[in-house]
Amino acid sequence: MTNDFPRFDLSGQVALVTGAARGLGRAISLALANAGADVALGLR
Image 1 (cartoon, rainbow, N blue to C red):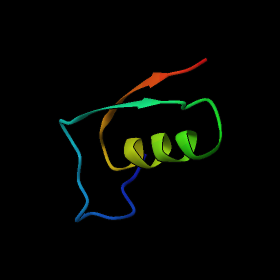
Image 2: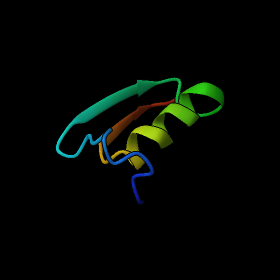
Image 3: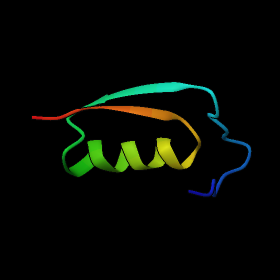
């Protein structure tokens, strides 16, 4: 993925997102991954 906001770089960071199956959690997960973070998802 490419980072659309180069000043918002999360390379080397880890994010844990709960409720990532749909809706806002999914959108946040995609945005964090797009910014370079390694994303761990908590799904139901």
